[in-house]
Amino acid sequence: MRHIVLADDPEARERLFPFCLTRPLAEIRIGITTLAEKWAHFLGAGVGFSTAPYLSAKYSAQGRPDTLFIRSHLIPNPSLAAAMATLQKGQAMVQGETRIAWTGEPDPDRLQEISWAGPLQWLEHPFQIFQWNGQLIREDFSWVTAGRNSAPVSPTNHLTAPDQVFLEEGPRVEHAFLNATMGPIYVGKGAQIMEGAMIRGPFAMGTGSVVKMGAAIYGATSFGPFCRMGGEIKNSVVFGYSNKAHGGYLGDAVVGEWCNLGANTNCSNLKNNVREVKIWNEPGRTYVNAGTKCGLLMGDYSRSGISTMFNTGTVTGVSCNIFGGDFPPKFIPSFSWGGAERWMLYDLEKAVLDARAWKALKQMEMTREEEDILRSLFASGQTSTLKAVSL
Image 1 (tube, rainbow, N blue to C red):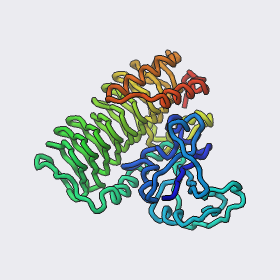
Image 2 (cartoon, one colour; image 1 turned 30 degrees about the vertical axis):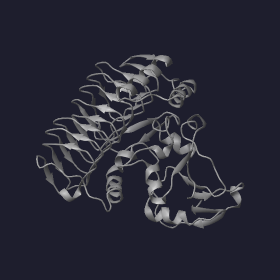
Image 3 (cartoon, rainbow, N blue to C red; image 1 turned 90 degrees about the horizontal axis):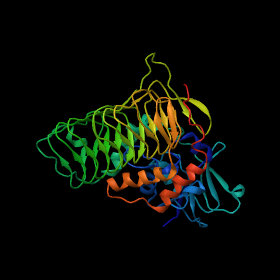
Image 4 (cartoon, one colour; image 1 turned 30 degrees about the horizontal axis):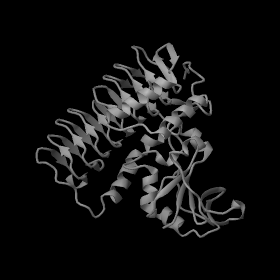
């Protein structure tokens, strides 16, 4: 079996802040699966990662002479993967001046270049995760469910377009409304949709996730594994192990892992003047236009207190504790503690202890490698601008 390594581009890592802070780019979830899971399926092989040094203890790869390296922020598709699989030692796939994939070679300048004329879709900005989520749910649904039968759907549910509804083993879905006319609905192993929930596809929820009673969920929305989600949610991606269990609105948003949005947290996704939303990219210290709709972009291990109000296009880093009755700033650096105008630096040891506690809440333990990632981020100056950024 061929050895596959998904290689991070440093500039792409900066652009995909804050989700790059705690993971390689290919571990980003979009659609039903992560980019890495898509590549593994299309190439029929396990994958490793070439990423930032401080992440390598958790996400590593050993290069070999026959290793196939692929740019990790490239959206996979079957025809592209099939073409890459034909590359021989000493060859590279290129489009124009851009190297897409290459085989292990001590001198990369001596690689034989093979041109790829087909379309390419590069994940360049965090808001593209929710913008492209519907497309990727549909594409993933076709191969994830191919040649398989859905688990039986209880007759207590109301289904529209039932052939586009797929339940994995052991679901608990009763008295829910599932409308798949606009896109497929995928329910992961052991997941639960409670009574009165209304779900419109395209929609995906991962293993062990829960949709609470009376939730209103619009496509295109994806939840990773072991999330607990309620209230009103639209066109959003939650990577996994995170909660929005109560009322409040989340729209056109991306939320990382181990996050919690307190009861009645509301997130604006549209400016009152309907103008372009600008989001802050901290590594590049630049504003980026995100279109007319962009809500919350929240890094891993961050949380909001009850009734928190996030403004349009708010970006939070990793391990933030946000609370208070007024709008917090639109950029909140990693390890921030506070709300509105009062901000403090989150004590590192308390931040690690709290992250452990959130993992324990879902019967999981924080690994030494995960702790070291937080410590590295803290030491790297992620906390350097504890001040509101006005957009």
